[in-house]
Length: 124
Length: 243
Image 1 (tube, rainbow over the protein chains, first blue to last red):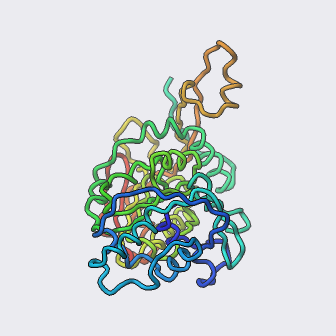
Image 2: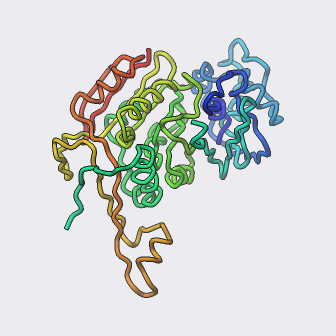
Image 3: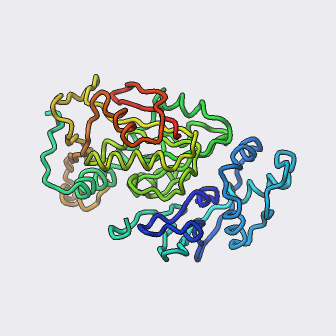
C-alpha cells in the first residue's frame, strides 16, 4: 500500500466517528519498501487538493520520512518539493504491519502490501 | 447440457446469501474468472480516458484490476477494493493498488476521491436496501462535483444468457474446469491419483436490473445528478455527478 492511499483511509467501525481520531490511521510494526516510479509533475500538482496535508505530515513524521510542514506557495515551480512528495506518496510502500485507529482501537492488518479493511459483524 | 440460470429461491439471510453465493464463489473461481476478464469495455474506457490529469479515483469491486491500469502514464491514480481476497491478490500481483473491503462499508473518508467506478458489482447485493447502500457508498467517497460510473447486469440481455423477464433475482452458473480448480479440498474430493477430475459448477446470486431501475436507485439515494444513462454489453449504466 502506498502512502497516497493511506491518506484516503479512515476507520469505519460503527460509532467510531471522531474525525480527529479515525483519520489518519496510525501505523504499527510496519515494514516499508521503496519502489521507484516515474514522476509526473502535472499529476502531483493537480492532485494536491485531494491530499489532507496535516494527516500526511503527521504520518510521514511517524515513519521518519521528510516532508515540509506546509505546501509551498508555487508547488509547480518547486522541484525539490515535488520529488519529496512523489517519493513519499507514490514510492513508499507499506508491505507488512497494521493500521490502528486512535478512536476505537481497531487494528487493520496489511499483508504483502494488501490492507484488509473488512470489519467483524458487530463493528458494522 | 449447458448450465442455465435459475430463479433464486434460497431461504437465506441477505448477508448469508452474499457470503455463500457471491464471496465464496469468487474466491474459488478467482483465477479462472480473472482469465476471462481482460477486455476493457468502451464506455468505461472512454470515461477513464476523459478524466483530467491529477484525478484520484476508487474502483469499487475491482475484481482482477481490469480497469486499474487503463489510464497508464501516471497521470491519474486509482485504488481498487474487492470483497474477494483471491481477486485482490491477483490485482496486487499485477502491481495495482488494492485492498480487501466490502462495498457496503468502504474504508474511505467522505469525499476523498475525484471519481469512482463500480462495474458489474451492485447486482450482487441481495436486497433493494443493500443495493441502495452500495450506491450511497460509491457516492459518499467522491467529492462534491466529482463523478461516478456504475454498471449493473440487465434483465434484458442480448447475449448468450437468456433470462426469464419475470424473474429478477437469479442464480447464474459458473463452470470451473477441472484444470482450473484452485480449491485443493475440492480437487481431492473429485480426483484421485491418475483419475481425471470433473469440472465444478458454482452459482452466483444476481439481482438483474430492469430498464429504468438503476436510474431510480440513484434518484432514491439522492445527492447526485444523473449525467448519462445507457445500455451496453448486457448492462445498464449510469454516470452521475455528486452534488
